[in-house]
Amino acid sequence: MSTASLMVLILAIAALALAAIMFYQRERTRKLKTKFGPEYDRLVQREGSTRRGEAILESSDKRVGQFNIRPLSREECARFGADWRAVQEHFVDDPRRAVAQADHLINKALRLRGYPVGDFEQQAADLSVDHARVVEDYRTAHQVAMEDDRGQATTEDLRRAMQHYRNLFEHVLDTHVTNYEEARR
Image 1 (cartoon, rainbow, N blue to C red):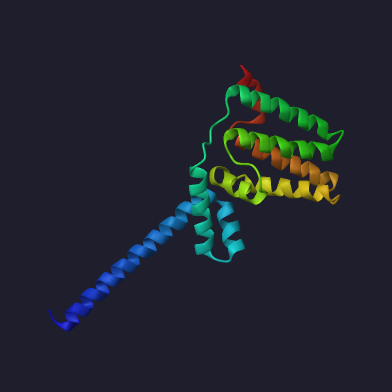
Image 2 (image 1 turned 90 degrees about the vertical axis):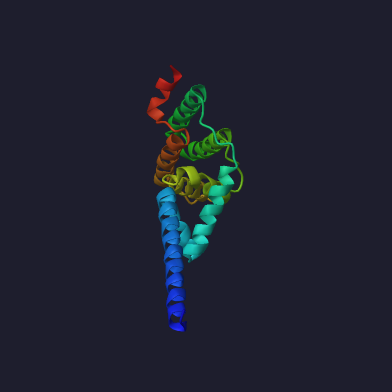
């Protein structure tokens, strides 16, 4: 085999290897974007690097894969549904307390499902693995709750926080608040 033929062969192999790597990376990105949705974009932007953002998402996926995440039973859903309705009813009289109760209730539901509860950012990252479409609701609602602790949230902010908590609550319980009565039967 001549030197020229050997060089062509080496270049062809290198081109195929490069194409395979590019295909793998493109497929990896597609899968992560599909799974994490808006959370993918948020994290890549925050990190300033697709590679770092994707590494964090993959790490979160592996971390959550080790948890024993379980659905709630019908009875647990019914109980949480009743608790949620009570929190919503309190909003008219005491919006600040209702938002604090909503935050507490969502953490209680997450803990019961098997998610570790503690550091908010880690908790949101863990939640994004299975509930990527609503984790931004969690971030927004939690931010309002923190602003309220500092006396910086308006009643309208609190109302929006309750809407975000409701959306998150429905997804975490894998049901709709209006279906809790059905779950009790």
